[in-house]
Length: 235
Ligand SMILES: [Zn+2]
Image 1 (tube, protein in one colour):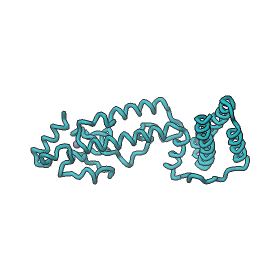
Image 2 (cartoon, helix red, strand yellow):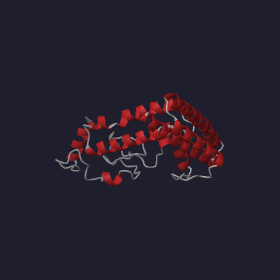
Image 3 (spheres, rainbow, N blue to C red):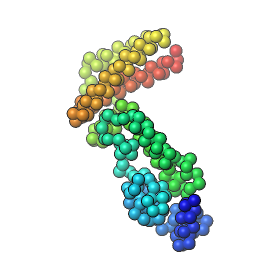
Image 4 (cartoon, rainbow, N blue to C red):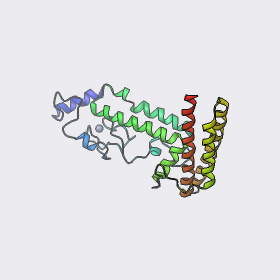
């Protein structure tokens, strides 16, 4: 495999002492380059690095590069930076990336590449999960616009909305049958769908305040969904 060949080559050049095979070459501090956005390949020193080629492998030596810290989830998952995403396309990209970077494919490679593959794989998982669910996708998109919603703040929630949530919570507390649970579930699901549409429209109109308000509401409903899940287990 090329991994061994590269190691042998570096050893011949005196860059990689025998016995250190599988570790980083001395000419290049992989640890300090990891995550620095360097455009040099940590392995061969060529103009590879995470910002060149496909962003994963050095075009010269094909060594796996560290993740590019400047790349956001939308870019990583090959999606437009927008609230509306094609979830089928997202899933295809996820599978494609895991086939490239999954640690299982690096068991015979150097420790540096093993470490990078772990990092890539975790990042791809996080990106996929974040962009798949409308709430986390919306919150992430807001964050990219510099807007964050701190946990636990009642962001200008109107009284009517808070009453609505309270009512659903009461219904949930009283629910004793599977049918009653199903009814609450379908109410919450319809609400989430409605909120998702509002968020979508708000982002399309660049109305970040509106998106923030709707996402905060979605978070309330998402908390109710968590409670439903817990209660289902105990029923
Ligand atoms: Zn290289």
